[in-house]
Length: 437
Image (cartoon, rainbow, N blue to C red; front, side):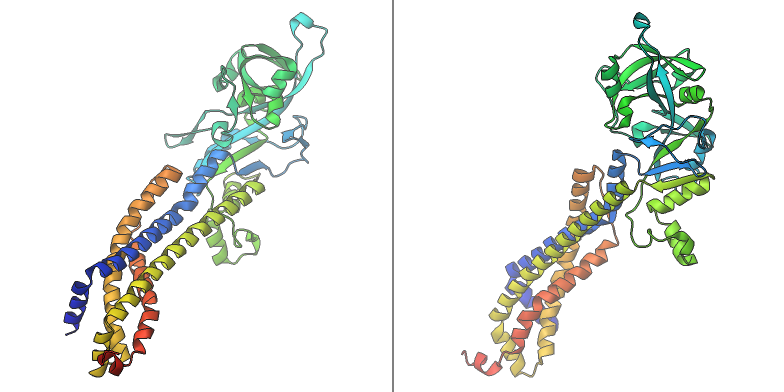
């Protein structure tokens, strides 16, 4: 009897049932898509953020007070502590090695540019020479290599048209290559192709200018050259002063802001196994003894705010889709109850309770919810893939775990949308209905 009533209900009003299933399928498709994107939005955004530069800075732990103006270190080369270049492969051997997408060591050397031979009376020009890597291939052991440099940690640095970055191998040549910042180039009338002479103490070098750098920072008023050349001029072979690291991290929360020294064992394990900027910085300090690693605070906080807002937006869209589906279900359920009031009155006259009447309607809604939820999940996977490709350039993988979530949400939405119409059906008096009143 039960199956007969349910079957007749579906065959009597197929269009209304299809409309209910379509509303549920649409709501579940949007919910599945947004939930799928939300699960990957952190990693996708972090990959996008890393194209905007480094988010960690590494310096010697036992160091003198830095004398920095505009981000350039003006301490004498014999002041302060240095870090060993040959320890850097350890960054790709540590626990967070897969999160480290790039790093660049820097060594700032005060030098003087010798006057042009055609004007020997002109004074020497003091300037800072910044040694670093551009496209450096690092041997990380086990036959593996890792390419890193400022093109990964400072990707906004550009070379004006007609120039190119210096070759790192040129540091071993008699005339090394370099690029000069656009401010220095304009002030001293330098050009691509010029050869300049620089002096640091007793060391001298001839530098062939291969391009004009545009960085938007203090490097625009400096010379950028291979790290090996800077080490020779400073008399610090195999050493550097600071390093910028670009790492994929997760947004900071209350746990990430706690001092690890005050954490319990369980909290410390959870903190150290989460890709917070602070925990990756801690991992770097463990891999490279004698260093101090810290997040670039404004970068970490800005990334966290953006990710939180986008996640909140995705949840709002999901909630709106579910509410819309519930309203559509409520509208069709109300119409169904009105059309079937004579049937409801007859069932009550024969002794059916309100709970039994509700069971018949709820079972129909659950069947529609299962069908709509399944169709919506399949459509949501395709929609999530399209959204991820359009926004992040990478397809979001299907999440099978969201199938039971979509089905459960569809059932909840269908039942919630049916609550008000069923409460109205419970108040039906069978006598007036059967008399046609």
